[in-house]
Image (tube, rainbow, N blue to C red; front, side, top):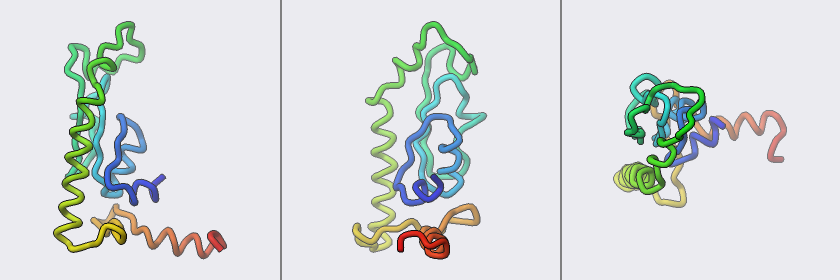
Length: 130
């Protein structure tokens, strides 16, 4: 999952472990929050965007909900603009770096970021992809 997150231009997720993994490897995240708090559990780092519900019970951490109003309020029409904005930002960065579309690969973004070529080397060591 870490390798897939590294190769993604944007990672769309709810408040989950994979969301935090993607943020940790430096992939821009669009995180959807309903019953949990983005202030408490949002993706760490820069370049992420949160789409949170605005219903009265938002961030209540309820385990069961009879109404599920938040699921009706967080629609694709609310989430897609955040995803599109992150994709546009990533595309501009690649364009400014002069990297052709066909050769784009994530660069190292810090000590927590992964290097896709490291996964290739590790696979070769274990006899995979031969």
